[in-house]
Structures are given as C-alpha cells and as structure tokens.
Image (cartoon, rainbow, N blue to C red):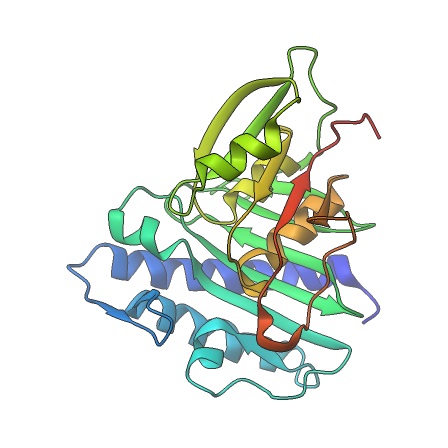
Length: 260
C-alpha cells in the first residue's frame, strides 16, 4: 500500500453510500433480530456491510475483508495475514434501535496488527472522521468541508471522561477514576467516543467491558492520527488486531492527558 491518504479519499464515497443505506432503513419500521451472541442486528447492518465489502474488493482485490456480519455468519476469511480490512457496518445497533443518532459506520485497514487508516461516519449526526497514524486526522461535514482535528492536553480543571451509553459499568468506572482529577463524565454511543477524543472534545475513555475488534479499529486509527493512543488494561500494552476470536481485552483510550 503506497498512498494511504489517496486510499482514504477513495473510501469516502463508499462509506457515504453505506451510510445512505443505513439511513434508508432508519427511516422505516425496521425489524430487529438476534445473533448467536444475543446482540441485535438489523437490515441496515447487512445492507451497509454488503456495500462496503463489494467496494473494498473492487478497490483492493488482494486484501481480504473481515466484516462483523460475515464473521457472525461464518463467511469471513479464516486466514487474514498481515494486512486486512476490518468493517463494522453499524456500530451502536442499540443506539440505532433507540433512534438517538449515536451510531456509526466503520472501515479500518489493519497492517501488522495495528490500524493504519480508518473512517468513521455518523450518518444521522453528519460528521465523517478519517485518519491514521502518521497521516493526521480530520472531520468532514455533510457539505464535504474538511478540517484537521487533534487531541487536546488535559485542561486545568481536569479530565472529561467518556462512558458507554449502552454498556456502562458505573462501579468499574468509579474504581478506574479514583484519585484522578475529573471535570465531567459524559455518555456517548458507538465508536463516536474515540472520535470525540480525537477531536479534542474529551480526554479519556476507559472501556471496562466486552468489545470486538471491528467495534473500535477505525476509531482507533482516527485517534492515533490525532495524537491519542489505546492501552490494554492492566499493564498499558498497545492494543493489537487479528486476535483469535476477535475479542478485545479491557482498554483505556487516551487523548493527551499527560501533554504529550
């Protein structure tokens, strides 16, 4: 892969097409079914993943695509190698079902166990986030106007902490924050939390519950491009991708609370 910024630009119309498919379903009285792990799925998940997978295979036919719905149905590649696409066509399905707008469409490219670029679209709210380590990160509005974003240093008044709207563990979060200077705690849905860190609107997101790799890979790339990082809990090791079973350990996503 020689030109990641160009590839990011090529993906913009693809993820917007997937977002349009999601919103077409959002406007209907859609049905909700359950997967084997009891997580919900809708026609929007399936339509968006089909659009993204077909588009990625046209752009990069030599790179396998691992999508959440294909994996759930046993159709994802069994050997992905050092480079693969990781797709979550609708992160925040519960937010989609509750119609609060806080759901996203996610595309990430993984190389050597790390996300090297990612796009996160919030189709109901408008913004499209993109970037990757060494590429910088940006947010684009519905008119196509783009501006650079970056993580902020910790404000003097303390951390703004993000928590999951649908999967929160208040006791675990309180334990993690004990002894830290906290200005505010906000709830948000889906991979938007990582994008809010990247945009300098918050400082830390401790995830002390179950997530899958496709849930966060694209947001991780955007966060890394904006100067942030994700660390495994406990210990602080970097989070890696391509793990057996695709499940993440607990982690914490940081902006730049130490000023780095």
